[in-house]
Image (cartoon, rainbow, N blue to C red; front, side, top):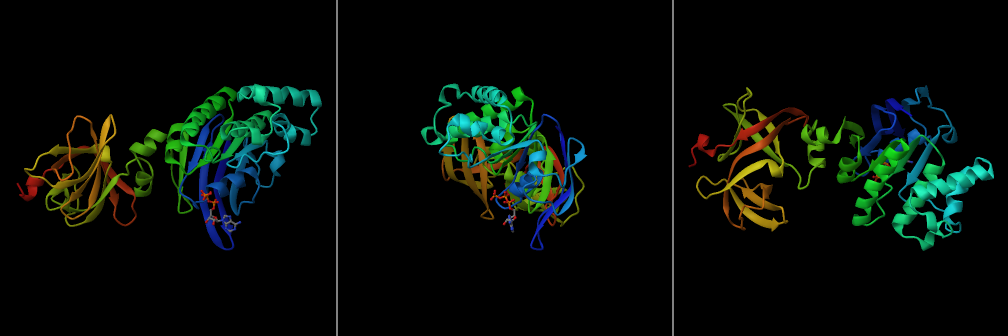
Length: 365
Ligand SMILES: Nc1ncnc2c1ncn2[C@@H]1O[C@H](COP(=O)(O)OP(=O)(O)OP(=O)(O)O)[C@@H](O)[C@H]1O
């Protein structure tokens, strides 16, 4: 079932917490809303659920305006971080609860509950109480409840954040698999960039109460709209440099200059973003423009920090063939991809591939 938001906004006590959200979520899509704490993710999800009213805009469910539809008429199910299970009820009764409230026939309830519990792999645990289950199993009960409701859209608010890292990774895959199998539309809220990237068909990035970008994960990573999106995705975080245009080069320090193929206004300031794995580096004291501070070998790669002449620390990810030690002098020779952002608005102006950095242009070698 498709869901559309048109100019949706929310104001609490004259403070705007969400502005101008526009998106069409497609039938069967796994749509992830991601952003830092307080950016308005839960507010948006609750407005879609009908738990809180929207201040502006329109919500369309299945192409019908649903602004004032009561929650139970929206044909949506919800799964929360806190599972929201009744502790004194068995797994089966927890899953059946919503169906009983809808006064469904007992036979139909039994059939759906059995099916839903089977689907999430809890077949033998139907008689247990939530306290007799692990965190992952409890979350599966919450999922079974959503499945049993037969809603075509499931809204999920940080459903995996109470689980440990290993189980969370496993449940991400299970959830995605389940969503495909059931063919339902999922709108999934998380503050976790990895979760967003690994699970989503499309991602909506929220910050400062506004939508920053909506796109498929690979495009969000490779073509970020602005500095915030570039910083939010990717570990270690992207390096951001203040640079001044100098004969169509972008000068960071007197010995670190990235050449650009664009025409730039001499003397103008820009922000240059380069991901740690995109920096090209030689361990070479001749023409060195950085000094290594720390090195961690992580099996297939090496993560390091280094310091530029201007004292700025940079992050590097290199392949594990490189032998690198703290205090080594290195030379940044280029970048696979360079993002150039507007200094004022922080919006992406352009990006370039295979950029050469040549300290020699300033004559330090
Ligand atoms: N009932 C309310 N009254 C006033 N302000 C509220 C209310 N509920 C939320 N807010 C504010 O709205 C903003 C968005 O909150 P929301 O819970 O949607 O953020 P979030 O992105 O889900 O954050 P988190 O990841 O921490 O849950 C916050 O600044 C919050 O303080």
